Length: 174
Image (cartoon, rainbow, N blue to C red; front, side, top):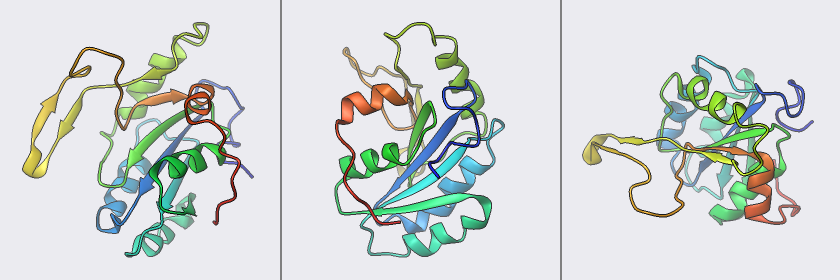
């Protein structure tokens, strides 16, 4: 079964969060927890392990009873994202790096922005400002520079991602 199938494909509430991880097992539980406590729950949560050599698989497995799925790929962040996309049928996708967390209302605030543009095929990505913490504490307003920029924790319509990442039909391990 593909991720996101519990909701109707293309439904406004159909969003998958894909957590990409490479040797960030020490942060992964906090990242997953930030997804699971969303005020607007995602239809699916997938951890894509980008060939980690740390405890990433063990940490991810702890969340399997809560519906979090796990997928392992060979070392390449682009293939990791493409594998996550290939595993979902959700109409909207939010990528999250394992060393990041989502604010509790991230999906509730972000998903309606794309939902309001369903009839506008020119809108495929919605991004937000970014708050950094720890040694890098600061607020970044996007776009930080002129041009078409987005960052992690942005929301994407699935077709926009598939177009930009190309063929993702390679085989991966779960």
